[in-house]
Image (cartoon, rainbow, N blue to C red; front, top):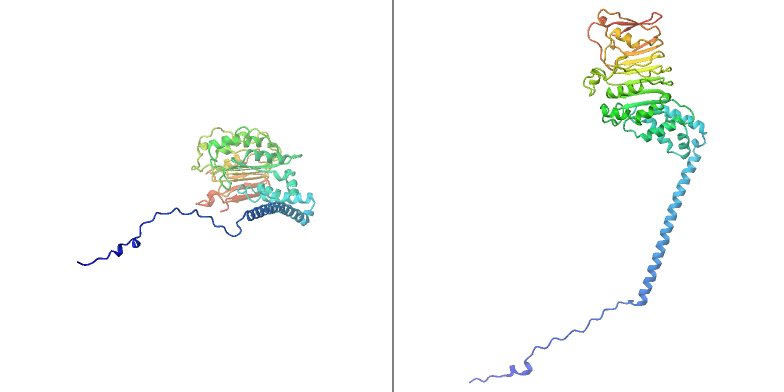
Amino acid sequence: MPRFSFALFSPRFISLPQQSSIPEPTQPRKLPGQTHEHLHELQTKQRALETRVSELSRDLKTSEAALKRTRKQVIDLTNALAPISRVPDDILRSIFRTAYSDSAHQGQGAWRKPHHFTRRIASVTRRWRTIVTTDPSLFTHIDVWLERPLECLKLQLKRSSGTTTVPLAVTFDFGCHTWDDAWGTSISMESSAEFCAPRKHLDLMLAHVARWRTLSILAAGFRPVFDVFQHLKDLAAPALESVKVVAPSVHKEEANDFMIIVNPEHNEFRIFDGGAPLLRSVHVAGLEVPAYSDFPKEGLRRFRAVGKFKWSCKRFRDAVKGMVGLRELVINETLVKPVEGEDRVVEMPSVVSVRVENGYVGRWNGPSEALKWTIRNAEGTEFVLPFL
């Protein structure tokens, strides 16, 4: 039999599994400088930096305050050294008044220019603001519309009063010439009622009617005009020099409130029955006189009537009746259409100027002779219309 060797099974060649040993705890590695002394140094440095930042913050605030003061001083000194700063107050006030008056004549309503001008110059310097706010004549152009704040209107009326009686130029704007159509409901009954309500816009203005020098009523509808007329009927306007009323044509049937023309709520359209002795100029657009607008006529020197309505010679005589001192007449060229068989000569003794405008209507069609009529003054001068 073969002989086997058991040398491989010798104990010295057998590796028995050993029991796993528990690892020793790992000690944290220390980096160079990680000592309590180093920590103390870092904390000290942190406190020093925080202190420095606080000091810089205080310096920044102090510097910003100093810069603000210096800027103001530069502005004040610049204004003080400007040539206009050496202009006396009375001359400067005269300049402001002229500019204010010019701004008031550059168009109605759209930018409320007199108000904007006053605000702008009052914000330039303290001296200018003092001059503006103490001069009543720089607050005399008063535009009134539904959305204008009542406090603003009260303030302007107060500043326009001053220590003397200053005449006012008053405009009631019923959505006609405003930039953003301030009267969103300008031709509704509600807006007129609100405007004319006690302690509202019209009520505030009526308290100063004795100071009105000019009155303009600009309307996109009929009702606001007639509502205001009712409040003006019995009043006196001792300082009033001119009246302007602009409304839609009485023949504009598409107007929202045209029915007030068809079925009027009253038959009185006269204003200032209490008297207007200084009234010299009247401009009426869209409304017939005296059917839908009437006024004191004795002192008139200029009368302008334009619109799409048509007068016969008789109705034209009724319109100008009482204008005994009238000097200038401005009408549409085709405002009067003679009725067959009527007297076509209208006697207006004091008239020296007749002008025509064609902005509202075109020329008549047909034979011109059938449309001819004449205005004759006391000197026998005849103005033959229309100028076809």
